[in-house]
Image 1 (cartoon, rainbow, N blue to C red):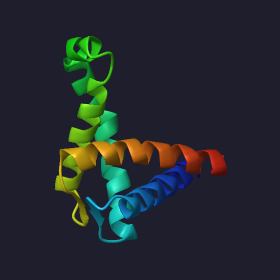
Image 2 (image 1 turned 135 degrees about the horizontal axis):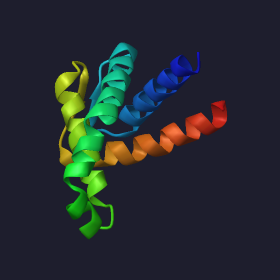
Image 3 (image 1 turned 90 degrees about the vertical axis):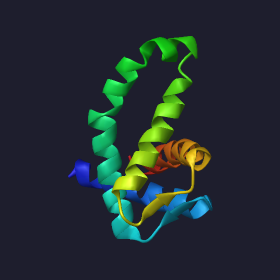
Length: 111
């Protein structure tokens, strides 16, 4: 049950973030649900591998390269999910930052 609640919170956070940022287009709530699933799967399976492969660069930049990896994974999500589009790398970076803040705020209210 909590899995479904977390999934809905992430989808609502994606809708709010897409509404706030003009460089991010979302066609509807179904696209937000699909984006939440695909982004969750990418963050579960691909992100740890990328973080391991870029560990020296990540240490050199004091962890800031993680933001670049996150933005690239958001761009990959926009390429995979129809109805979700990000205008460019800068918008993907900003989307990741705003999404994490909104997701944290919504989770704090619900739980």
